[in-house]
Length: 485
Image (cartoon, rainbow, N blue to C red; front, side, top):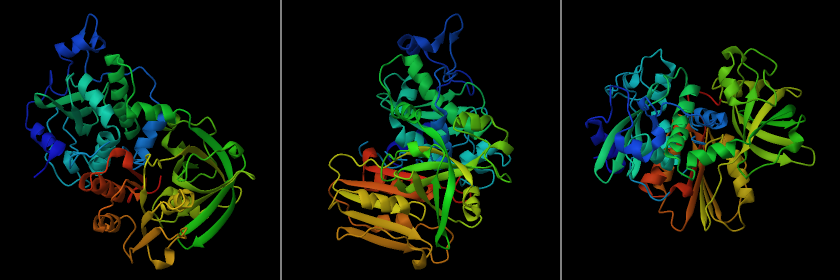
C-alpha cells in the first residue's frame, strides 16, 4: 500500500478540486486577505500562478531541462541533483499528464506511446510522460520548501504543512497541499500555455517567483537560492589542444586558450556544460555572452548541442583542463563530436558547477557511478580528507573498461560489469546499493550517471535508508535514449 505523501497524493486524486473553474484555480478570500498581491485591484482575484515579473535566471531552467532531463543535477534532470531529514516513502508522487480540463488521464506506463494520455506528437507531453519520476523528484525533493511556498500562497492554503506536485501539463500543475485539516488538491495555472520544454521549466520556476512576490515574505527557498547561485555562471570559449584514447570507449579531450586562463574549479566534482556546434556545422553559433534564454530563442538549426562533463584535471599554470568523454556509440551529439574531435576545434564551456557538498560531520562516503561519473569519483577520492572511508559502486561495460581510481586501505571498490547489456538499461547500481549492509555513522552519498539509475539509487537511499536531503547528491549526467546533451 502507498504510504506517506504518496498515499496523500493518491487519496487527493479522488477529492474535489479546489478550483474556481475547470483548469483555472483562483485565490480564495482568506488568501487574498493574507496575501494582498494575489488580487488585481478592480478585477478581483488573480489566476493562481498567472505571472511573475522578477527575472528568472535561465541557467536554472536549462539546468533543470538538461540535468536528468528534467538532475537532477539531478544533477536538473529536467527537474533532477540532491536533497532534509528522513522523508516518507514515495515522496516523489506520480506524474499525471492531465487533460486540458484538468481531469487526470487514465494512468499507463510512463514512456509508452501516448503515456498518461499524452499525444504522441506533443513534445512537451511526451517529455513529461517519459521523465515524470525525474521531474517530480526534482520538484518535490530538491525544491521541497519551494513547493511548500507555492502550495501555501498560490494553492490557497496559508496553513499548509507540505505540498507535493502530483501532475504537470502545459497549462499548469496539480498540487496536493496538506494542512491541519487534511489533504487538498489544488490546480495552479501558468500565465499561458507553454509551447516547449524550455518554457515549461521557466513556468514551473516562475511559480516560486510569483509566490514570493504575492506573499511579500522575507527569506529564500532552495529554488531561489539556486537561481541566485547560477546567476554568476559564465560561458568560456576554448580550443581543443589534445585528444587521447584511454580505451575504445573513453576519450580524454584537453581544452585551453580563449579566456580559460580565468577558470577556477569549485570542488572535486567540478563539471561544465560543453557547448558544441549544431549538427552538421563546424563552427560555434554562440560566444561568451551566451545564455540559455538566448538558446531557447534561437532557431533549432542554430542551437548548440552538448552535455555535462566533469573536469578530471585542471592545470592552472598552463590554463588547460582535461575532460573524459565516454563514447556511447550513436548515443548523443556530444558523443559523436568526441569521436571526431581534433586539436583546433573551438567549443564553449558553461560553468563551473559542483554537486559535491558533504555535510559537517560526514564520516564515510558512498560513491555510485557509471562511466560518465567515474572521473568525478576519482577526483573525490584524490581530494577527500586523509583516512575518510569510501565505498565505491562502479558500473562499466566490462572488466577491460574499468577506469583507474586512487586506491587506499579505507577505499573499497565494487566493479559492476554490464557484460553486453546496453549502457543505461540495467539495475546494477541500485541492486548493489540495496545489497549493502547498513551504512552506519554519518554517510554522504554522491553519484553520477544515467538519469533513471540515479533516480532509483536516490529513492533507495532516501526512502529505504532514511537519509536526509543534505546527505544525498545524485547527478544525472545523461539519459538513455536521449544522449548526453
